[in-house]
Image 1 (cartoon, rainbow, N blue to C red):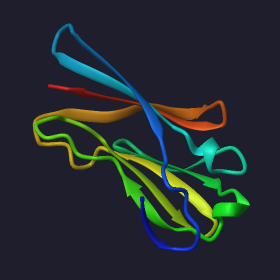
Image 2: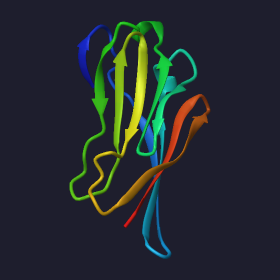
Image 3: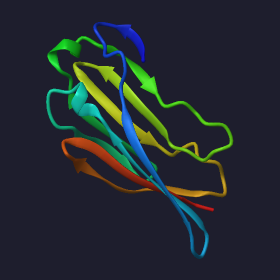
Image 4: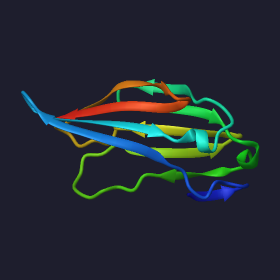
Length: 128
């Protein structure tokens, strides 16, 4: 967590489940669920969506409403992975899944996005 101002949570979290398989081409699917409920005062809602990017927003708990900052998922070397990011500003937490920097030659995209248990849910896939 990189705090720029205000009172921010010490940590933020998300769960991922990776499902790899082969049929016609090498494929991998990943489910990510952001634990916004631990720091938000209500349900997340969709803020923006494109083929390789999705962002959700949720109102922050009063304790964290002054927070300005961000947290990014660590990059794993030699892997194809999405960028997961939490951004805090204007009394809200924003969570995004970004596949726009996936290397050329790989078909990557967001397959499904919705709210599950008041939390952001994203299913993304890449095909080699």
